[in-house]
Image (cartoon, rainbow, N blue to C red; front, side, top):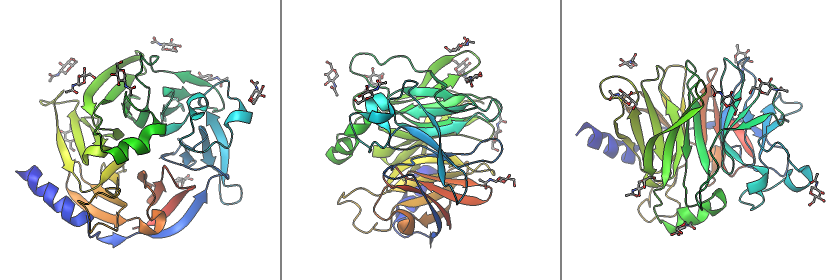
Length: 333
Ligand SMILES: *[C@@H]1O[C@H](CO)[C@@H](O)[C@H](O)[C@H]1NC(C)=O
Ligand SMILES: *[C@@H]1O[C@H](CO)[C@@H](O)[C@H](O)[C@H]1NC(C)=O
Ligand SMILES: *[C@@H]1O[C@H](CO)[C@@H](O)[C@H](O)[C@H]1NC(C)=O
Ligand SMILES: *[C@@H]1O[C@H](CO)[C@@H](O)[C@H](O)[C@H]1NC(C)=O
Ligand SMILES: *[C@@H]1O[C@H](CO)[C@@H](O)[C@H](O)[C@H]1NC(C)=O
Ligand SMILES: *[C@@H]1O[C@H](CO)[C@@H](O)[C@H](O)[C@H]1NC(C)=O
Ligand SMILES: *[C@@H]1O[C@H](CO)[C@@H](O)[C@H](O)[C@H]1NC(C)=O
Ligand SMILES: *[C@@H]1O[C@H](CO)[C@@H](O)[C@H](O)[C@H]1NC(C)=O
């Protein structure tokens, strides 16, 4: 019952955000790159580090230089073919395309969920020092890894496989066809044993993931199902899952803030007639550990009709990422 009430409130509020975010700064990627889908900060507070359309990971080093190349996910990268690649190119399959990012602050390793290579680990000095951690794809299944979070206490990596039927280059087709592909899954990689386990499968384009502050549960967003599921990891409900939040739009990445709350980026229905009044999406939605909505901010000024993939609160500042835009953003709610 509580869940139903929350759902109705969420649908209402998403059509009338409580505030409109004010854009403070755009951090442009080197042209012609796009798609800083997710952001991460290193243990010294450096960054943001962002993903990009040509598979490289960039670090923001300040307003003078902007983004500087940090790493890439294919060790034998051919720069003639790969550097400067646009998103949704078939060549991304050999150049890599990271989507989710997260540091292990104890080791300095950067983990990336790559749409073509699966889960990879990049050593503390970046560059091409990359270890592939996903098993090779079987048959026609893909390694379309998408969302990622690292538990800061245990170093355990949670990540999603968005689909085993489709690849990133097919993504817009899947979204517009409304096929409702449910071949996605949520996985857990334990670096101390190298073991990967599946926590939840049959997910509808699971795009974002975040572990709770004390590691007692993990949230996973299902982009095409407009909802977020919670998987309990500890306590009496361990190993069970439930609906955490039903939304009026498409939830992408989820990021925990320093108070243990979560920011969810939510996009529009992409033309669905079911959302005639929701022209103010995309939005950032801040919720408590219990799924209670605290704040909704419109990202219309930051991203307009383009996808807002991530909202992340860091050092008291809000950062935005996008699969389609050519820049990351800094904004205030
Ligand atoms: C975050 O705060 C720390 C401590 O004040 C500072 O060293 C770091 O540069 C900040 N990072 C960013 C990205 O603002
Ligand atoms: C990289 O790709 C270019 C263009 O296809 C090709 O001419 C070159 O030989 C490749 N370099 C390597 C090291 O494979
Ligand atoms: C590569 O990364 C691993 C950890 O992921 C690290 O132990 C190793 O020292 C790194 N190698 C270089 C050459 O940086
Ligand atoms: C994957 O393979 C199965 C079995 O051959 C087939 O039914 C399915 O359509 C394939 N999916 C794609 C996306 O090619
Ligand atoms: C995990 O895999 C890496 C890379 O394949 C290997 O270097 C390491 O020894 C393995 N660790 C364990 C505990 O199996
Ligand atoms: C659920 O996922 C499993 C494993 O990926 C698969 O074998 C099964 O067919 C799926 N069930 C449905 C109803 O899609
Ligand atoms: C984790 O935190 C939640 C919320 O603060 C609390 O209810 C729960 O008991 C904690 N679980 C563990 C295992 O510490
Ligand atoms: C959850 O699953 C793990 C691994 O299968 C098992 O060790 C644990 O006992 C289970 N916990 C509960 C509460 O069922």
